[in-house]
Image (cartoon, rainbow, N blue to C red; front, side, top):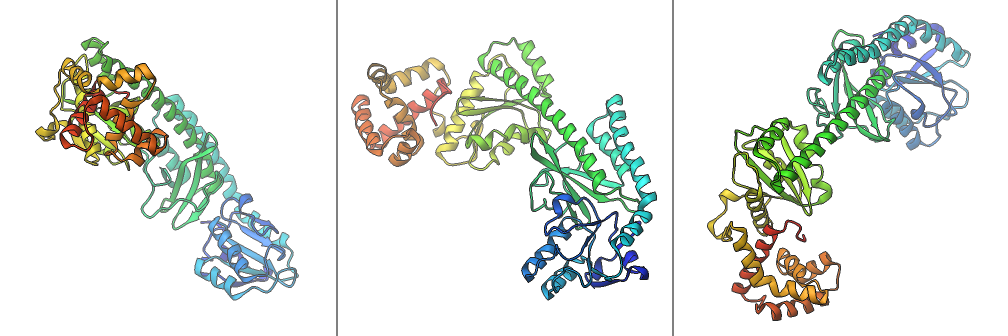
Length: 494
């Protein structure tokens, strides 16, 4: 372990008294430095001994307690206060906090110069520092070797584990793994209270270091000491966090390239412009088996939330193709793979899934099935509806595009003609109104107009279509026509 707080306190020539926090005397001490700031944590790194003449100690009890808690949270080993100099009386609250946290508060005799304390720490850690320096060089040599050998992230982190003396975890703020093959957060882990790029923290058996990427915290590197090994400390973990940031940047570039290629492939499949052999080849590149059943899912929900859904599928290792078109997110999945359940798990999302199908040149029929199932899911306020499991009453619309066009023209044609001639928006108003269960206020908010405008438009729509939005039969016809319109044109309002 090296030099500890207890070792320093036991050296009689230093004249040190333990005022509180005796349970933490086994904390290791890697450095000792004079600091007279009430909040020095931004300038501290790793377990060390903060020395103060007392100028750093606030007078009020609650601020003294906060001072101790702040140092303990930052991973400082202990604080040593000069006796009879500038420190105010140490309050019961401060000493009680130190005892609760096992954070040693030391008092140094007036006649002992701080140079004597720092010299002891430097001498005790000189050999250890030299070993650490060699280990830091080995960390970056490991990165060089991994690059030359083409090692993946799991193999790279296995080697860094051996060099650093830490079991390494790489996770998001919620504890999820960031890179496949590298474990996520250990049980019971919580992110640092501060989320800044310098918000490293130690405690509860692990050390946490933020992984910075593009000016933000992309995740956290968590190190737990390996039994029987000398861990290299916070600085080494910061170096490894830099390597983790490089790995994440490469991974994000790869995922973005795959996302773009997948979106292009799915767009071409929806348009039916690829030959079947090309479809099969593209599916294999995406990790999908063209010889096994596939399903197409259509997702609608909060655009900010569902934009992360493909990334969640990538994290879980679920092969897919994804494309956002107008108001829906389309996702092509292998059946069964559990991907639809992942999509439906996003808060506020509705998912419609087509019947299983084999690789084909055109996805027009699966797209219509997915959209119709999605429409039914939204009307029933359900997260997930599969077209194959829908009740017969929910699939009245024909699959033939010409028949669908006939329904739309007969029922909604007058609205489209009126909109084209007068520059109105009656057809879209009807679709939004039906999608919101004829709630006038909700429709007005969605369209960005006054509710009286919606009421006036309803009157005009009823006149043009010859249907009364208070009669069940007429509502059913309009609702089916709206569904047919959506199947023919994915760019509907939502």
